[in-house]
Image 1 (tube, helix red, strand yellow):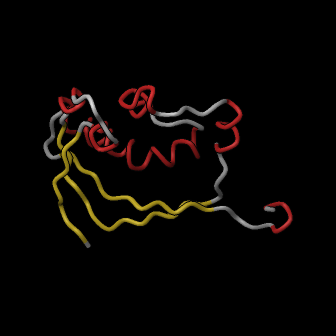
Image 2 (cartoon, helix red, strand yellow):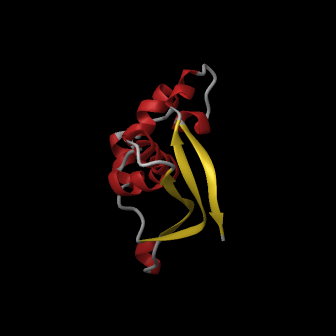
Length: 119
């Protein structure tokens, strides 16, 4: 319908600010991993046609992968992006949590959050 209606396709992402708790390499990596999970989970497919490498690594076989045709279909499929941002968190590395057998999205990040501020 886009060809007929000449409209635009947008995506709205609700996210938060993410800052390392300390200036250590571990916490900086944790903040990057956190952004991969919260922002990259949605934006990487639109931009690169696949999920972030950190998600693929930490989720393992539980994360479905895009086929080549699915990747090509979703990559570049939005015309604009809107961001809603209402709070920020400090992020601390906690990769040891990945040793838990029954994991979920929050555990797979391997981070701890501490609320910074809310608007």
